[in-house]
Length: 168
Image 1 (tube, one colour):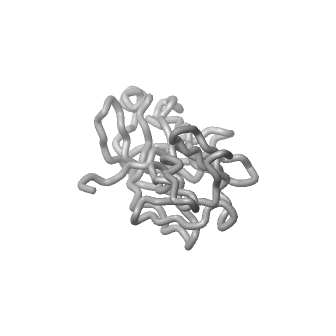
Image 2 (cartoon, rainbow, N blue to C red):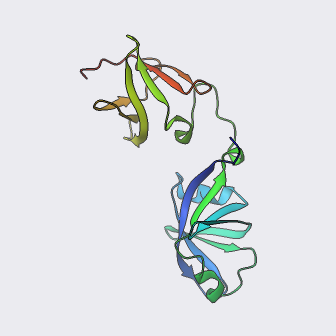
């Protein structure tokens, strides 16, 4: 891969005060975890820029941050709608048999009969366990339960092996 992979963690969705602070809608769980990463990669109107987070906090149910070189609300207003991302390398290493969702999306899913069920489109969080949404000839919802349904994940080969029938 020649360009680093961006992971979208949130979106700048408002202004906070007159000193250039912005409100951020966080996709992380819990939302305040977005503050654990700096620098951020901001994408606005298709243009990426690297920016350091100077300060940030949970303000009620919202995240507010101060970004380097943004000291008034007029400057900060230019960032409204920007996606907040980091590089994949900024994440801590996953434990054995644990995976980041972003690493699973796009992998090919094959069952024990060596039939290709499709590609992981996205994942759902259900509370009990995560669920792979696999698009192929039909859509499969496969609980991410190891080793009962997910028998092996091979990130290098881009494959997920499952104990799942095509008629489920």
